[in-house]
Image 1 (cartoon, rainbow, N blue to C red):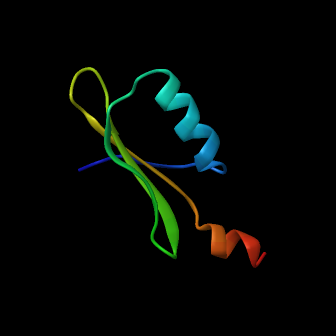
Image 2: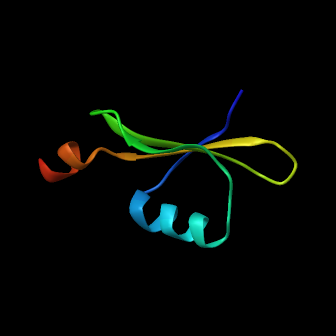
Length: 60
């Protein structure tokens, strides 16, 4: 089971994680319904971050 956290700004989160050299399992990808990204922490635990897709956010 991978914990998922909802974020408002995936671009800002991605920039912060890259600055801190957090290893990506999958960089942010817009799936159409949302943007998902997966990272690993120093202990090897996986974490997922989800944000509204750019298309969905633009329609609001």
